[in-house]
Image (cartoon, rainbow, N blue to C red; front, side, top):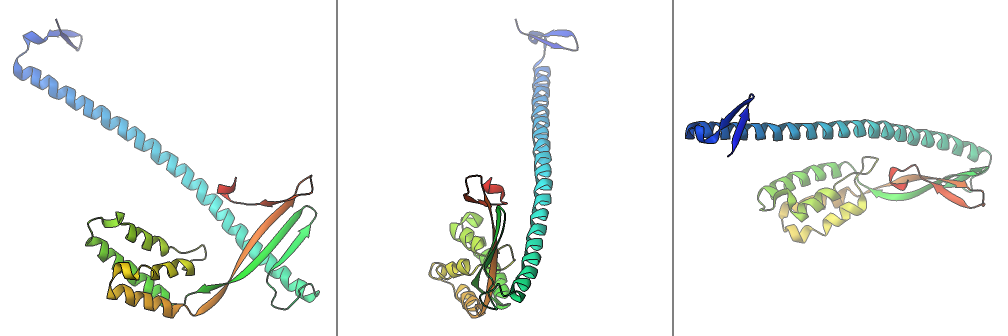
Length: 223
């Protein structure tokens, strides 16, 4: 015989009416729903706390890295001027060089990069508007691979500039989109590609006790 215990009173099911059993059933459903909601709230609270802690740590480190980058840029540029005064540069416009002291080496490398003028910003804005309208008419929405690819190619580098190689890949999608507006945007991108810039990269090396130089990479994903 099945019994139901509540508030220290034992109630036999056969003594209950249909309405009473229905009420008990609904109460159990509410309790289970509340328990599920409590578990979900606890999970979301733990998740939010984890993301918050990691975000704060990442932002602190990112700020430190930005300060390190600014420091290295300023110090090496100032020293390059000194190198020029002491005749340590092969030519006046030499931008790439190495500095070595003891077991540590700093390598400064520069290369010419193709950049865009202010018209590229207008083209990027128009392209985002075009893509937004395009996915609104697509069955796949934002999950459409072409939309995702185009938006990825519009991402900017650490200097806030559009990447020449990425934008060049957008030209290859012109036939796929088959749109006068898209083609006009690509023309604007091509016209804006008139500026050449210089990208500077820094590399750090240390010599171990075997006399071998190994790269020191202040990168999270290189640990």
